[in-house]
Amino acid sequence: MTALEGKVFSQYLLSQILLILVAGVLVLWWSGQMRVSEERRSLREVGESQAQLAGDLRLPLSGELAGHFGSLSGIEIGFLLPDGGFRTAKKWSEDELNLAWRTLENGQEGEVLSDADWMAVAFPIAAGDQGGAKLVALQRKPRVLAMGTRREIVWPVGIAVALALGSAFALARSRARLAAEQERRKAAEQMALLGKMATSMAHEVKNPAAAILMQARTLEGGAQAEVGQMIRDDAEEIVSLVNQWLFVARPEPPKMGEVDLGALLEELVKRVEAWARYHRCELKLQQEGDLRCWGDRTRLEQVFRNLIQNAVQAMPGGGTVTINLVGTGDGVSFSVADAGEGFSAKALQSFGEAFYSEREGGIGLGLALVKGVVEAHGGAVTARNLGESGASVEGTLSRREKAA
View 1: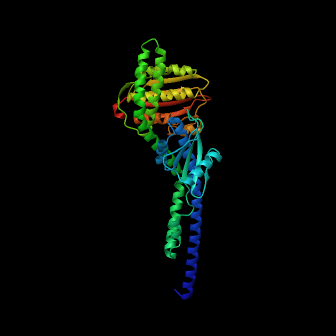
View 2: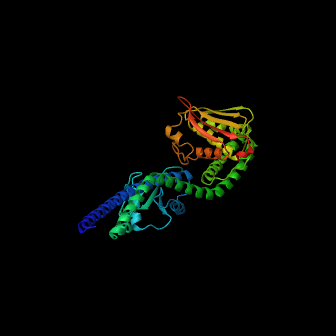
View 3: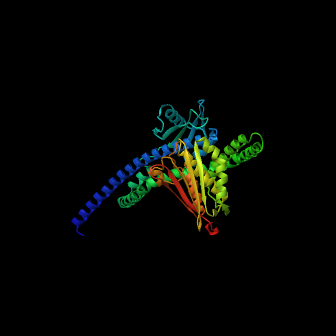
């Protein structure tokens, strides 16, 4: 290589290094801006979901509960009580408290406010007896350019080129996965929180519920039979809800045995028809053939309880819920149909996904449990709309033991 060629090469190499460094800084800055935007969106979504869950759980808004929420989601959680009190798991700094109060007092619902180091969002907790309460979520604000990255890009030219190229490659790959990762993060945070809360609540709820059920059965055998049945139905609904949380958060293999699905549905319909009538709905059970299948009776009862409840809730003006069971050579086919407005396109696409619900106040666990239980039994379940009105959830259950 001649001296001139060397000089041109050096100038070309230097210009390329500078170009790569400038491009790298711009990419890092852009990525940082996107990261800040994504973190703000994630904070807003997690804060909203935890405010909804706090209302649905109907637990006292204590510092301990704030600690559970915060440890599972990785953000700071505080509760503003209706009487003006404020509860956190640990003492917040002056900057955190100032931003929290500014967000609670001046921020619009779901609006993310920030200072130099923190960002915060607040949502009301409107369920049950929590009227006027609010949840505030705080998260440290991400830096647009981290100090470690700036040190890397001022290394000697040869190392800088390699790092810049490597960083660009890594960023290109990470950006392609960012949207999906945000969704997984949200679901994982909710599932972890649900699992911890369900496990801790199972003992606290089931023991008193069992005592209530015993008293209800005593009333059912006397002059107050109707009152006893109403109490029993409500207590069973509480136990059913806890069981749903436990199964979705920490699914276990079903306890399999032969189940007469026809007898199970006849008993279930008798137990919930008063509730259905209260909502101006009629339950119509149609059976045909040998309806024995291989499964876990408790979980299968929960499947059909959820499907019947969803069908009734889909018809606020009343109507008929048709439950159809047909015995086949291999097992039992089932469907639960309503005459409501039907599923939206998004709901059909997201059928069986945990925490997806289009019903106001819904947690999105009912159909997730249905799908999980049926598939754990070796069966399949789908949903479809019925022409101009109504929807149907349909599936199959095996008659053979090997399905377990």
